[in-house]
Length: 175
Image 1 (cartoon, rainbow, N blue to C red):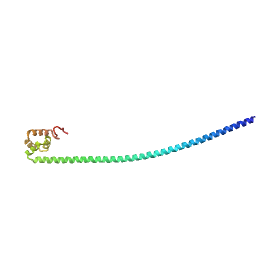
Image 2 (image 1 turned 180 degrees about the vertical axis):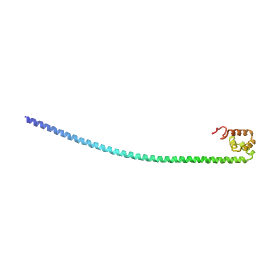
Image 3 (image 1 turned 135 degrees about the horizontal axis):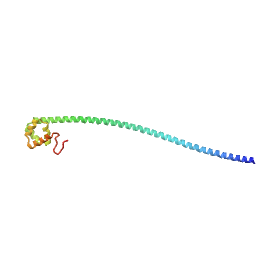
Image 4 (image 1 turned 90 degrees about the vertical axis):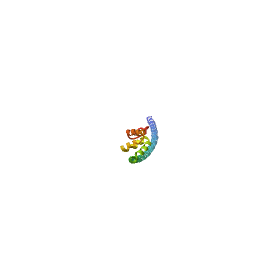
């Protein structure tokens, strides 16, 4: 009976061993399948990461090119601004020279005129313009012209001359 019992226990243990082995084999197949899925997911992730990195580098390169182009354009704009500023300064100087020449010619014209003719012209001008013309003339010529003018207008021009340039209309203020 002992023997039967041993055979029976061995048979049962053998059967259980077979079942455990089969379970382990099934589990091993499942695990291998899971490992394959994980490996595929890892490969997909690495491919996505590589594509993302390539896109990032491409965008980074494009950004650097745009920044470079922008910096170049800014340099060009700065150079143009400097050039324009120089041209404006040169134009101001030329305008001042032209204005000075114009005033010199105007002064010469009034200096060469007869006092009565100059007085008649200055009387018809607005007071601020008459004062501007008289300001450029020598004091002797100014006195001679004022002497030939209407006293009221001569007085107004004298008041403007006393204030000094720039001569502006009464309703304007000095700049």
